[in-house]
Length: 118
Length: 110
Image 1 (cartoon, rainbow over the protein chains, first blue to last red):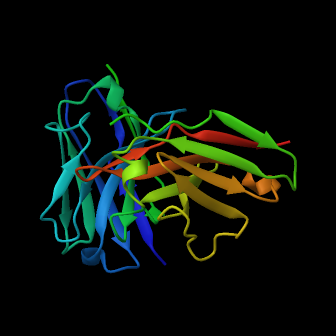
Image 2: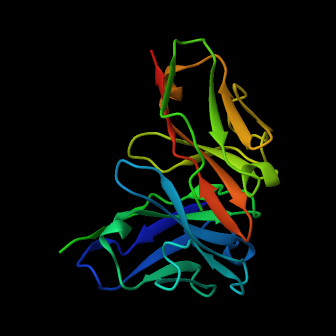
């Protein structure tokens, strides 16, 4: 059974940094691209960032480029999202999702809530 | 990276069919065979129900079907059931390795 468990959310003031983690289990982590998708409370989904199965390629939404950094640790089967210079508009539930190919997100975690507020 | 356009809501009685549209551009929906659909119940994570325009993952009921024409993709729920009441989002791969989601549609079973 595939499990993705996010952690690290919380309340932070604007301008600060935070790191989210996603622990993966039940599959060969190093064989899959992984992504972060966020959902503003009461609103829709927004793709945030993705990383290739081998960690060599990363991509970011324009809204977070230059502020967020995605990474993966194959020794710990963990996906991370380093978020710097946080803004109030980054407030959202952040989901990690597995991508078996470049075409879909087939498993999602339960999400972790980030609130950026003074 | 503008969101794909979906109707805000659709509704139908049990047993009826509803169709949700998802309109993008030639840089996303129209340019690739990589449209997926997700079902989200309140307080839950999204669940993949359609990928590659019209493929269903194993375990997804066959009353979900989908198609694409030009820059618009569509999801049809046939034989609407109470448990189909949820939010539905389309998603497309876009040029330069981006992904764009739809604005979301709330399906109400009357």
